Image (tube, rainbow, N blue to C red; front, side, top):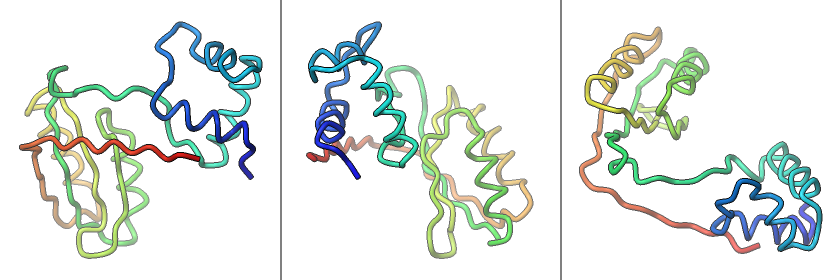
Length: 149
């Protein structure tokens, strides 16, 4: 169960996490509590699945990255093993199992086309991978979602 404090904390960190050496101390002052309480509640919220990650979003193309969306057809028995390999790859930001023929979808950010090709080649050669479709980003759409609690 989320407390009123948890809701206030979650509302703030979605869009206003301070860019400071001790951001949780700044949040604590704003919320009228101690830094250790903020850290403790954030750990709890992460463990309970309310928070997936805390961190900044960068404009990947300005940092020199290329992006792609990848659809995989994977034999059902191999899905856990294939997903584990995908999740271990640097540059994978999202990885989801879906219903349908293409049952794993993930995004990959790479420094260059060669690095992207290497990762996709490794994944396409995994046991159980039937087919891989590479859908390179041609236009960026930024969806900003904030959940007011």
